[in-house]
Image (cartoon, rainbow, N blue to C red; front, side, top):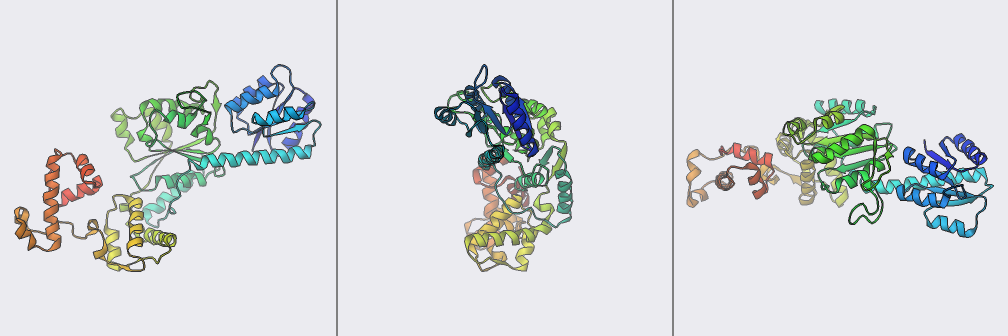
Length: 457
């Protein structure tokens, strides 16, 4: 239900507008003066304002300027019984949506009101689109673990409870957040995403709460923050575990009070948002290490949801791969590749450390390189080999170049990888994270390599 504020010193005008707008199903607020109107606008955050031009004390044009500074996206319709063309032009230039003269047609008011709200909604959607979650493949799965997860997702979505989603990178935490929003009563309101890991600590307050013109160097105008954009909808705080302690303290207060001030501002803005947070970190460990606030953790974790990794739902690999392959082939305008039975078995046995995201990257690579062809085991990258155990006797570890040339390919590769990884690991002083960064391997995959080649670290 849209909320409309009427600011006019004439009681008869307020009553007339109030009645017709209430009959149309709007929630109506009233103020008899500009100062009261500005205060109500700050407190209630209306969707539309009718503002009289001529009022005792502060007039409507001055109030319009002040209102647009604080709420730049709020549509304001000016009304007056003593207007001139100059007054109307001035009002439009100062940001009014439209200008109507008294006495006015109530039918015209209804139409104008609907158009103003529709225009404001479209502008709001355009802002939200800049922050919207990326469109990805559908959330698919028929494995028992995913069916249980979907059932939990359905039950939680129907409530208005806050949710903390955990899971490894690439499992689809953002898709779970979208599903929660779409299954809720807020589905027709914005879903606004914030990647807490991608925004610097210096800018995150401005991103979340917005800022006033001149609040800091480079703040050339008013910026509406993500909290305000998400009003009456859902705010998705992705990678919440990467947020600094300083920002955690500020966000905790705002989450509790559902109100905040823009950076550089003094006016309190009230919102109504459902918060969904996500992280790939173990927040309980972060709390123990002093990196995450315990009170914020329990505020966000009203309902915990864990997205299963792909290795726990290998029965879904073929289903997901079929869907991704069909979509990617349609995008590239080519024939999809076909997978031999033994190839699919190999893919289902693979642990997929990058989860669904890695599977999609693999599907795209196969569509590009093997369009219309059958993908065999020999076409798979090395990490998909069935027997990753060392395929060489232990006494070949010191083999020279001539000896290696007499080995089969897999054994020779294993010898080389063992020597290479052992040497690089010594250079890194046994630091696995540093080694993974230097040689460009995902950390969990590197761990498996070292274990399979019995490299001590």
